[in-house]
Length: 539
Image 1: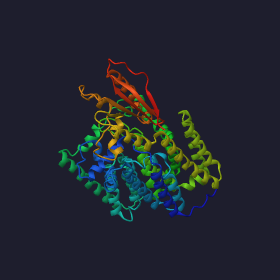
Image 2: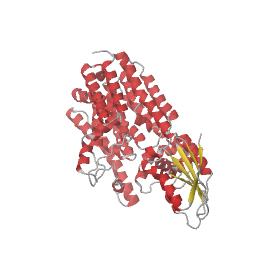
Image 3: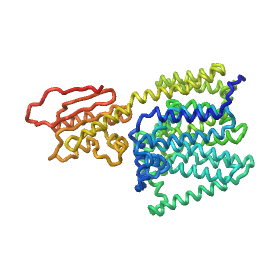
Image 4: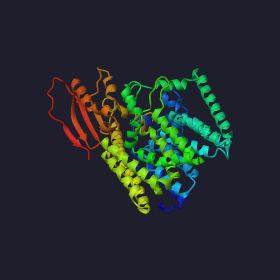
């Protein structure tokens, strides 16, 4: 057995991890996603303004996702960057919880190294999504379980709160619901104290009764929330209840594996295996806690239905999967000397990570395959000193690449400035047309819940009175839509068809790598039409 490089600065690792999270939040900002995050930002602001946000819509009951973000925007101004401070707080909180329970300096180092640089976890750091606070509530559950013998009352209350507030943040926390029962079986076999479970189940039962009682009082239906979850289901490319048995079979067999490989969760899962297996062999308490949590969560993602009426496994969106990272990072950290120094486990992990590279090759993901092969070679072939440096480099490099690619693709500050400028030059007689997802997000873009001027969609423009059509309009195309919303890519063609039918002529076009802005003028169909158009490139 080789000896790894000694690691002796646990406090420095935590401080470094916190600074890295703060640095990413500050420097790697790439704007809103024009999706659910917009709704949560507005809910949070409205909540602290005293408005009733519990409208009966599915997202409004996820108050754990927007209360803290709304608190920040209420104090410091309505702004998506300010709102995302809540995600930074939750990430730092989760890291601190896990760091506290790690038993050794080396495990604290590896926890920070594998918690911080997951590209999907970091991608949603400067955004407002329920998955970000759920990372904290997920970490709080094993943290509470670790103290169940020393402080059974407090740990029982903490775990019950983690489940309750986690459920009021996003329902995927129920994938950890089997964990307390699994831990109870473990303690029963080892004849450990059971007083913690009396407190936990008492608290969670009380919270459940109060929760159901609220809906009975508010909506005359104790199960209203669960019915709203059920009614929120719809047929899409990501639902399975409407698909054939073959697609369902694929989803329950190899699709989770290919998803883990494509989204680079594969490395975290493979390096967690030694800790999970060793936990059952040694029956040490802390590794067993994280192993049972991990097993419960992965089985939930793999098999559990999102519907009460029919079997519909969840779509494995990489954003959903980020709540695995705290658990997997803890497993990796607890048995770091196994996969680093033990010959068998080192080669086992190296081979299976390389196997992920071959899966990536079969999926034509060449860059991911190369990354897996490099990681496997670094882990299995380099001596301990160079192995440590190589792994740190390989963990951090994808973060910089992802940030650069996202910035080059999106250039959100440029989009925002151009959008505001064009919107300020618009009015009722000269409207600004743009994508529906931008129209739905413009309160957050403009940092104003009641903007004076608003961009409109093509469908809204079609509803203008026929007797009073605008003399001109401007079309604002954001090319990022081709990547994020490919269904919106036909907007330009649809507008041109509409303009031709309604006697509008394209007179000016400005374009750069990210934007295309076109002006249309109303013409008299009986007069001669000017030829060509004016083209001005945005510098």
